[in-house]
Length: 227
Image (tube, rainbow, N blue to C red; front, side):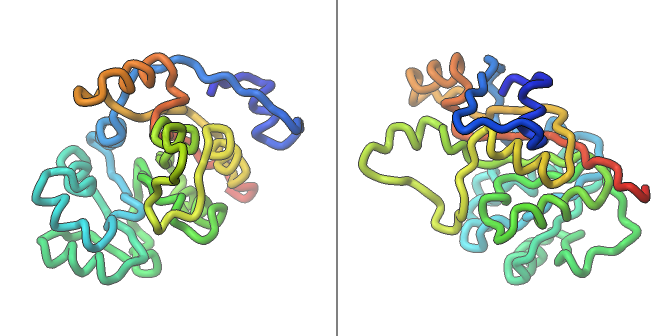
């Protein structure tokens, strides 16, 4: 989404339209994992919602796609936080440490970056989730599936969805939610790499980012009045 003062006025709620139209700038193709690991490199990182789905942990670790492992390869320190105690236990049994339930996270740990990859669409209260992510005072990267992505546009007779999802986010509604939770947006990303098995789809998404299947926003929490 192209950012300018007019768009920011809508995102902040100062301006209203019942039929807003927001242009999407052409941006380079970028894979979601590459985006996350690139931003996490050399940093002290909190991985919020670190566990993934319990039945998928061992499978993804075996094929090298487990995101927590990938972030751990590049981060200076990686701390995992999740509300799923059973999944955290599964991670510990696989030799992964520095894992916490939110209520058990030590107060003296500081971070350079919080990453919340494809978590926001699962949570019960979006604003509370974002405010928790921003409570550590560092930039936050939020990624989520794109409601306007190609997979959704081509499903003419069916919806294809992770059955634990509660929301779909468009570029605007994700940005609006993040700004409303007290953040300033730094960067906007449309994620999706080039798939050799689907060259036509990949070319379309290369030139029209709004068709890509993933969204990402890097945002900084606004200072609190007493800070």
